[in-house]
Length: 307
Image 1 (cartoon, rainbow, N blue to C red):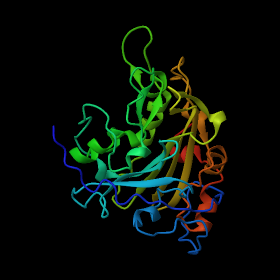
Image 2 (image 1 turned 120 degrees about the horizontal axis):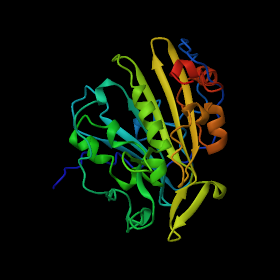
Image 3 (image 1 turned 45 degrees about the horizontal axis):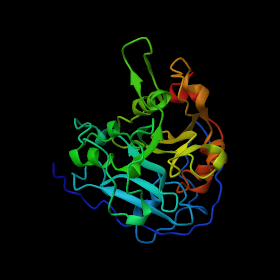
Image 4 (image 1 turned 45 degrees about the vertical axis):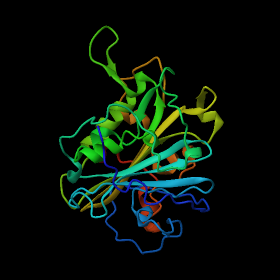
């Protein structure tokens, strides 16, 4: 099957930024903000880095990949599908970020037969071989194909290896029959986020997800001494609606021998402040500082429908 690529790399941004930590959280904050933003991403060639789903970009040999399609602008005026920060030295994804609202719904699902390298990257920045196969780990989508059903091309783009991390089946998958039936913790978290998709056209859920690749104590192993297997995975979510903003984080260790499908998801929730401490990533840095400070210090579980 021949698939046309639409502006897959616009462009690869080699950027150097100093790291600044964020702070607090609230269940909803209707303030418009005072406009001050000391830790925002600085826009150079790619305006998408100023979107709210983007965390602070990391310095070093990293590129930002913004995947776009030529689909109708009704889902996104900038035609952004999702974005990735790729570490060219580690040849690993640090995070994928994207938006969720009604415009992203559709009927396209799992349109690709396999997983592909994004050859828009320099060849020495990705592994020439797919080390997932035969490793005991699954290709774990970070931006799920189930969250990008609005077009064939949008769904196809989620199958790039730049959007993958190695995950255990009992973390990333499910089994619906047999004695060992269950649903992985990562799957349950993704399903939960999907239920938060805003119905109003003016509301948006901003999502940033990934696995831990920067701290050796947070790495399980390197497949064949090369491909990093994160020990922990995270999700950072920011809701914007007519009441203002609220935020929530998930942090979970991936395990190979336990579905953990009886665990309430609230066991794995953290504030965005805490998630930043655990990951070293500055989430939602493009919010005005006063709003950012007010939404990142606590989690209102009831506002998210969690017990």
